[in-house]
Amino acid sequence: MSEIDDILTIEEVAKYLKLKPQTIYTWAQTGKIPAAKLGNQWRFSRRILDQWFLEHFDEKYKNGEVSIE
Image (cartoon, rainbow, N blue to C red; front, top):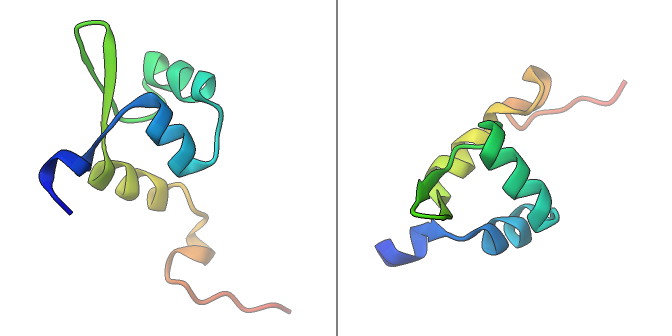
């Protein structure tokens, strides 16, 4: 993957996270998701998004070992 592939648009993030672009836009505006505003456009780092996504899992799921009781 090249460095340019690491920078995503709102539409690409929405597709990646399986959410609507409007949700990503709202989250970016309110600081709920890590983003950088360049002019009037939002950009996202795939690496930072991956870290952010993993931080939002419950502790019991973070290590990848889930026991069903």
